[in-house]
Length: 260
Image (cartoon, rainbow, N blue to C red; front, side, top):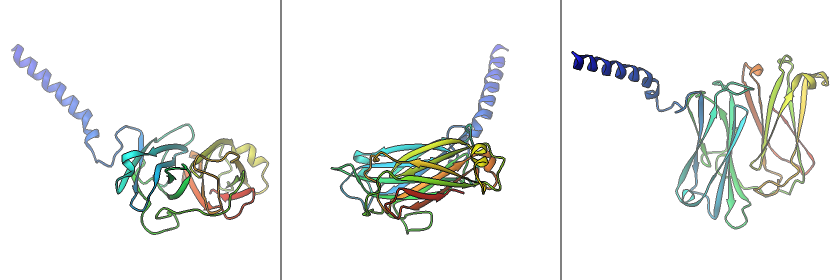
């Protein structure tokens, strides 16, 4: 009887363990950790040469991450860099239409300055799983530079990225997190939208980001791509996070971008 009782207890523990393990045995497209999602950048390296480091940056859900690829990982035809983000933070919760961007900067093996870059802007289609983007390949499109692009324009000294955020449809929003990036360098601010709206005549708030230090990847130039993302739960619908980008086109101080 004791042996039979032990068998029943063992079966009970096995059943309970099986129930709790089932969610982890789902689709391989799901993130391993609960409450997270991943941006997986598959980077084509076939057209790169004399590269000492690849600086890969991404912004999603109001947060930012940076990773470097070096050594033997640069000697393959391609490499994959994965970024994991929390679905929820104190500003926004990721949704299926929210936007993100990822860029890879190829740095010269001798000077450590940028040789070329490739960027993609996309939607978080799997807000609880894996989102894959291709970097450095394909044709140039509205939301992708395609292959790695070189920049040969004149230097822009101490530029300010001036981000305009129209809020005529969201005049009740309280806090907004704004993320900007140029040449692989991030800046972010969490702003009091109500305070700025009171100072606005047309329900569009302006947030300046001065880049007064030279980025690790080299001087900012005409032709460099820059991004801005705005995040807040109150911006839903349509997106809790919306990103926009454009190329710098002049050597002046102010570079404007409308982020919604």
